[in-house]
Length: 220
Length: 220
DNA sequence: AGGAATATACCACGAACGTGCTATGCAAGA
DNA sequence: TCTTGCATAGCACGTTCGTGGTATATTCCT
Image: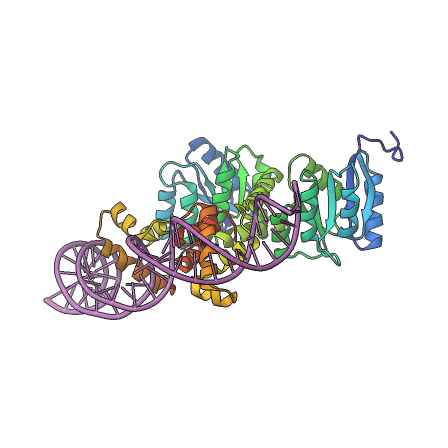
């Protein structure tokens, strides 16, 4: 098969990228690679979503710029996934931005490529997602892990005692003071006092504020 | 420098692994690699923690089996990090276990190696963590990403309307009904009705239960 | 034109909450 | 020995909550 003779078995790849030069370069690269076909290259999420809603040929992979005008890449991921959940999305970015990585992955991106990657590594990344992997360089992997840790470790405990933590954990189950008192075999007044002290230590004065703070700062 | 002449500038690496054969193989591999020194190889976390508490020469890297008898690798990570926060920990496992990966990374592991990796890839992984990266093969990276998604996408929103979501978001800041009414320029009674409806949709009947559910199921 | 969904608004009342106090017993540490 | 911290317990009182109703206006869909 010559490089110019694309067929239906080729893996369909779309590009969404606002830089015309980079977009064209990518498109050429893909179309010159055996087994891949890029028939659509858009400059915005909006355009590509319109096409997506009106075509029967959904792409297997979308290379998606993260820093687009209008609808951002992050928002785009969610929309694309709504229409075609099985499409793999690989984010493209010039910035090595922690928060963007995090949000993109949470939103459903399969992986991540820094712009300026070699043509070979772009092709390799696409093959990776198609085989169930996730293209990430080791430094991005490191950041992902850091975010994991951040997600699970701040636990500043505000000097709560063991008993107070225990009661806090019962509060977040939705129990009221009387129920907690019965569960712990102590007086209602005791629980009242403990909760009073917890409120003071966490500087809150409503049940909602307390529970929210407990979750946000991972006290539970 | 010959392979047998280790010096103080070598990167100190410990091994914690209960399989004697694998432990010795690893130790030999490291000591034969230029720039690395493995002076300690333990069969349990307990043993290595005792050594760690009594030595001035903390390891730069620990290769830690995840499936140990006694204290598990996951628990071990936490203990090691308490004593020596700057030590990098690379988990070793025969199983490609999603939950273990998750827990290990949350606990502070820098990376992950499947047992049976080639000697070269072990050395490379160590170099990666030392240079600030995170060794993960692409399939594990994929799983990490899946967990990210899982963390952020349950979104069964219980049929909450936009207005109800807005009020829910104010509730989790700790505001009470009156304050929310003032903030949204509507009557107290209106907010009362909305909250009543939210309670019904989420099947809760206390403020604490509501806020907890909102956090747990990421409605906010 | 009719119906469903949504946002708005009001009332009433018992239950629960938040907060100000005081006070005792016990264990650990200075 | 004396202090400090913690868990326990109680009381009072005004505030807020949760829940049972009813009702109107608007918007959207068929």
